[in-house]
Every structure is written in C-alpha cells, then in structure tokens.
Amino acid sequence: MYTIFSRWIGYLCVVFVGWLAVLATVMVFTDAAPGAIAIFPMKNFARSLPDEAAIVDTGRIWIAVRGDGPGLGLDLYRAGALLVLPAGLPGCLPLPTAP
Image (cartoon, rainbow, N blue to C red; front, side):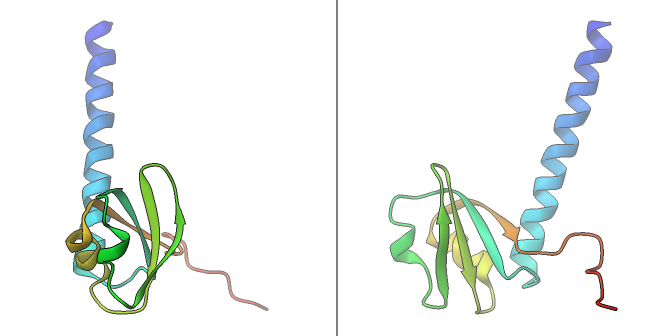
C-alpha cells in the first residue's frame, strides 16, 4: 500500500514540475502573456526591470509585473527572477462573446 501511495505522489510531482516547465517555456519563447509573476526575485530586482515593465503587486516570494515590450520573460530572468510564470492569460477556454 505504501509503495502505491509513494508512486502516485511521485507521479503527481512529475506532472507538477512538468506543468511549471511548460509555463516557464511559454513565458520565455512567446509574448502571449501581458504580465508575469517572478518567483524568488533577487534583492535588486525592481531596479533591474526594463522601462516598459511595471510592478503590479508583491508578496513575500513573488512580484507581479506587467509589461508592454517584447521579451518580458527574458527581461525578468535577466533582472534576477529564479522562475517566471505567465499571468493575465484567459486560460484554455475561449473568452465568452457578448450576445
């Protein structure tokens, strides 16, 4: 029983890490997201942001950034974020249209 449980926990961890990798790849290679969440930013992260990026919100281990320029994900990595995830995307479902 313990082996089956630990195996399922392992599978769930692999799926979770894989999903984070997909999100980080989307942020680096596309400009689909209007904003990003920088997780574990370095101490001087805010000073290193590009001019077209603005801090929207902050937490203890994350900073939400909105940017208009191309390459926001790479800019945030260069500024000192350890992980950059997209923010502001509508998700997998299309937005509803007004009647």
